[in-house]
Image (cartoon, rainbow, N blue to C red; front, side, top):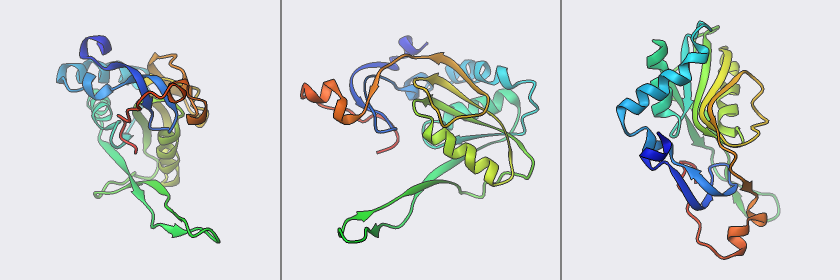
Length: 195
């Protein structure tokens, strides 16, 4: 399905994690077809089917469509988090501005205390966004059942709960200063939702 949809890309990419890679999976191309969303959503929901899940939460933007697809397959509500940038502040002594951002629930979304929640993402490399959402779930009183993704690209050491992935893609990712495509002077593409 990934190949047929054109979702598998080769080249020089900056991932949402900031790492560089010669391969990228653009799940939006896979999920633009409603039938694909239904099939992939049902497949990703299956491992959680007996877990009495009450709610599915995904980070925007990448997890929106597949999170909804999993929620629909499980017959439970779906909500999403958004990254909100904090005010820029001046670093002491150097005059540079820095800004941090954090995942938040907005739009009137909430997590009922004790709700059994799964976090669903499209592609996970380092697990940073999914881990932030998982932390938010527990901070707000939810019971984190597990994490699911269509693709697992890396170690994702921040994810400690039950993690289900439909496909492991052993793509190599580099720190920017170690990237062979950068050394070769190849132009970089930044296709993800984080800039």
